[in-house]
Length: 640
Ligand code: PEP
Ligand code: MN
Image (tube, rainbow, N blue to C red; front, side, top):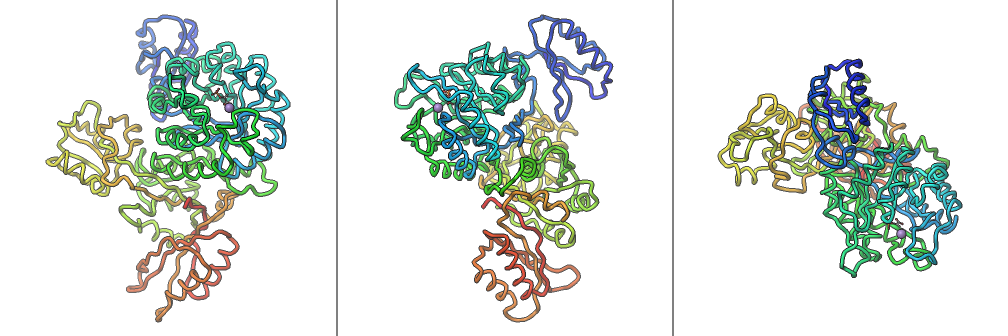
């Protein structure tokens, strides 16, 4: 059952509830959500829910209808984010994570070489089997503990956590010394003694779907792990046994969205074991990402023809590199971003500095403009992780002020939308806040939804609220399906959702992103109603200059945003452009803005691409000589 606690519950009241439930033999799990705190109580005991409902501090009690309890979405509405290894690679939510490596660790040289190449291409977790559950007893069985040592060394050298298969309960303890994530293979998905032993470690687990397991059986296996002590589980669809022989297994992509409805646990896909054929791996990997998978696990080998296991399905390193680029391109289409690490690993990099660069923990406060659930919050969580502390503020200016005064360390602000164009306010604010610099960018695909109070039907709608941009971007849908309703412009999209909720308007809808519906517990009646699906917004991540280096440590910058003014004379702008062209910089944006207080004078805003930061600084020196005034607003990494 799920016990929803009142917001003003006292610690004593909570202890009392826990005691009553534990006395009846329930295992209790406390889950703190964005809105409220709940206790999940699971066990064999039967109990009249009303006995709990009457206890002080209880808001309500809901039975869990599914046989899996701790794993069920009913118990926990928010996505679980699994954190793997010392460098805290995260899986779940809006990220796509890439796990790669050979089927088996074959030698120290082999795993080191493959680790280097998959890391360079963009993998964030290293895989490799040391215990191989082979169909034939005469096939290579893996290097055992020796293989684990090599895997650990490769993971440490290339700052990737390592994941490997466990096949026997007696190896579990020994393996905890070497690895960051256990893999339960398809053949062992229902090896309950193994699940119990692995669950007890509390460590992250990659739980593969059994070859002929139903989704429910798979989730029951996850429940075994959870009931025994770990909640760090990543499900992995790896193909199921069907009558089809053209592929090794049949990849069940539809399992991905089905599972996501049923459980809060992240789910990834393994196109290598699903297909068994190298040429099918990349297309199926993309299909998995398109299906909403939180990542892929792919077999890669430096010499697949010599591989001791699964050579025919292992990608060549170059194929893997191309796949990562394709996945990266696909991510924004499905509203996700690729979990990345710096591409070039500086020499002697420590884990901590790698973390500072890419894995930002929940300690920082990041401001954004708008209400909870706004697209800006989505961008913030994508850039900083789900557990970051957010500070929603009413205006862009208040975000700049929060960063300046130290109330927030960073702010995430929109600068450009592919349909609406530049958001000038933020460029102007950058101009008037010289101590603040751009350190990063985040792109988000804007997907609009028609959101209503639960119970409102499509035919009840008389009014639609949204930001004017939201209304404009859904013009075709509104004209076609809701031609007679009143369109009410609102100051922001997420705000329009909380407004119709607060006013209990049962004959109104709001247009906003899915997080606004989730945050306000409202219903999405129609998804993706925007006229043009190629609707992306770019956000700048800004901070005070003194924090810039710690944010960017280990990240290779490739873009600069600069601002300049010109002397009022013929050819002034072309001299700037000459510098950029002779130094072969691509220029992705050129805007002119009126200078406040100086009528008919303009400043120019340009984004410049570069490969080498030193070279770019030389360009800046040259530009500052030909411009009247010149300022670098920020140097950061952009995903071109
Ligand atoms: C593996 O990942 O190497 C493996 C054996 O996978 P599965 O258990 O999915 O067959
Ligand atoms: Mn394999």
